[in-house]
Image 1 (cartoon, rainbow, N blue to C red):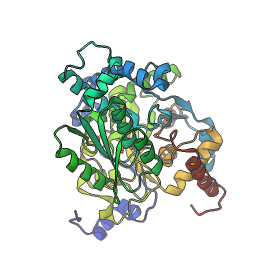
Image 2: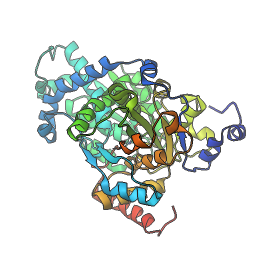
Image 3: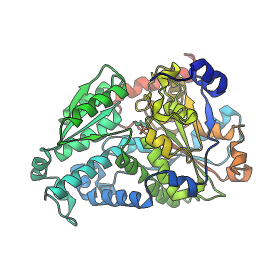
Image 4: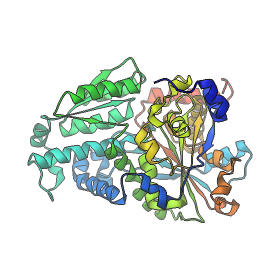
Length: 453
Ligand SMILES: *Cc1c(COP(=O)(O)O)cnc(C)c1O
């Protein structure tokens, strides 16, 4: 779809867009943010829906523990640790020449079991919900049964009558594919051109059918949707509009609340929590932010981070055009090394539902992602994939802003001194060694100035 107003006019009227189209890193604090008591009404889902999703994951825990032994220690719950980042915080504040205010933490979804990325929350949840519905309707399960029985030949034979499909840049396909195939569902993943070979190999090894496209994520989704629509036994996981995916992500918030309490971290008006979430189509960060707003209300401040070549959510919300607009309309190429974030058109569902709940949006260059990747490894010993670093610059953007954002929300020096900054690390533990070494090498070259930023 072409823009109704020429690009040049957009650039003249919206200075931010002029910066965006030349790939400059930008930060936009949303002037439309509203008290959560009001703005949560924009979301067609509530706390009860999150509680239901959480209860469903608990019902499935015995199956997950049986099918994926690496989750046994956690009782079949797919959860990640909360880790402090003292070394990285000191280095970042030093670089920016700012005094450390508050503390920096990492939500290490890179370590989520089964698929090693944030997609293990929403993607796996949607597969389980769909399977539960089929099993109850088909008499394979009765309410109150032990779901461990789903890890059986009989259950796999039952599920093999049904199929599930998804379009993906990689990580969603990996989550849906691994869980779908383990249950016995016939599973097809439509992969965009930028998807990594190792992800396709891994899926094929699990018995998943992988279709490859010589085009971007939007095309892979469209093609997948079309094929799935033609098959009445096929459930298509709709990354752009699925409320199930969204709720699966939202469950993260109550789990985080317990982890913050255990770490002695207070979150209230005097102790704000800032959360920096890498954003692709928007379902992952949107769902997590929805859960966080339900859990912490106005004490939590969520910001979305996107690559400077793929700022689809920022563009959609800033222009108010949401899914009607793509980064291509603004002359951007949607090329980024950040897997999962190479998305040209945002979810209209997430953009609209969350537009008064997200404090801000910012962009990061690929070079900066690689540089931070190397710093994270050196200072904290953590190996993340490039997308997962997008949250790291958030703390500096907030502490250095001069758009009146902190003043407007009453985030004064005293409160900022009590703040917790949480970087949501969205993936990394499944990246093969050689690939991770190449990422690190690239990052170190930038750190040591052997390559332009
Ligand atoms: C998918 C993904 C995201 C973003 O999630 P969306 O739902 O697409 O916004 C962030 N990081 C990684 C590593 C991902 O795979």
